[in-house]
Image 1: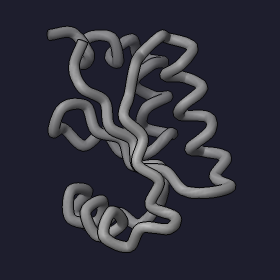
Image 2 (image 1 turned 90 degrees about the vertical axis):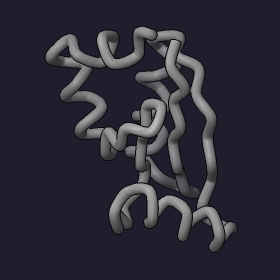
Image 3 (image 1 turned 120 degrees about the vertical axis):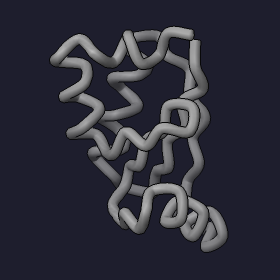
Image 4 (image 1 turned 180 degrees about the vertical axis):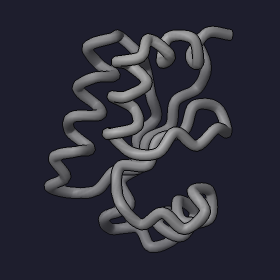
Length: 85
């Protein structure tokens, strides 16, 4: 399984929804909370080409986007393909 990284923040319903979807599919992920860490926020902005909303989700180094994009991949059946080695 490929590495999944998700940048999140406090009181974020879309972050919770993204984590719920990943947990439901038994996909392990690394979570970075940018709410109190300005360095990690800058890291996210750089990696996501300036996207300021959370969550920002990456599979390996590929930027997926936020929850809406993650859910769209799942609905099209493409998420599992992206996660396979």
